[in-house]
Length: 490
Image 1: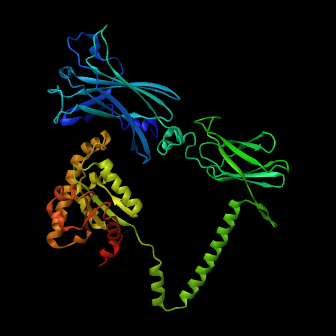
Image 2: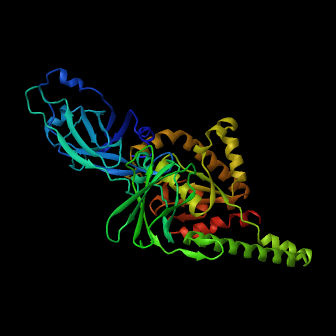
């Protein structure tokens, strides 16, 4: 899965809990050897799993790149033997560039009292884990514990899952793919200058050696190899290769040498284009022409700026002040985000913070990002300082936790529960104080994600704040947020 197996393995705890239906939970952890139940005989054993399925799900790693994890789901058979069930063991064998075998054991925290859940439905559970490598076959098998006795049928379920290659929109960001150049774009241009072919491309920081394969394909396949060794990373490089004057059907392949794939790295192809001839300085490729145009435009812009500046200084002082004031860049809006303890930090708070930063050009303040300062200053003083310096304070309404909020999300809720509850209470008290004194009320905003969550999830006193439902009120929200500086100066 993604930015390196070690990063993803940090997401998969050696022991983690996940939930089934009706609140009955399981605790899952890695088991390296055979189950201890195999050492003794059992008079009664549970039936086989009713169903087993698996799919790849996207998750965000610490580098903010998306990655894949395997989501394994299973359901239990509806018969009386379910009362004998204590655990389910799941083993995953991967076959790709390397082979790997690993098993987890999911213990049911309580004895089953009935064959079905509320509503006469099957018991269902899921486990999210196992980092995914590109172009790998995963053989997944699962069976219930205690297992069948020796010489008896041992029922189990098995499925197969195949991961995509490095061209996949998510997989290309994985460590295995980036190490073989999945994110490298050489931007190749090829043009012919008399009896030479000029090749321009951008090098990669993954390696310093490239092989250029030149094909002249008019009448026969002729390959000419040239080795290029360069120590310049991520810069444009130009190479000229002699060819015959009659060759007009030419293509070039650049074969990089990276540590992750050696001589078997993905190749990139460029085809012949026309060169622009410059009588004074010789041939110029299309890329060079673009650079010359940029230089000319930049020179014209500087000349216009100088003329405007001279004209400005000839005017009165008032005119000059107006001119420089209008060209001053607007500072980003500083936003303090407050969220209740029920919120899903991974799927809601971080996603909302990314939205504010990218689409609203805002500087975002979240307590989880400033734990050290909070410990030094104390939560009350830290929050008071942030409230004074922030242009807006946004109370984020909790969203209903859906099945998509996986084990990573549940873990973040448990870890953040006490801190977010404390910070939310302090922020609400500051709001009540400002409301009583009729000060700083213009700073507060209330954001929720659907009509249902806006009714009873936050204290009623916050209903006096401007409310925005995303994404329905996105235009109004961005407009009011961008005008924060003007509001504060009134």
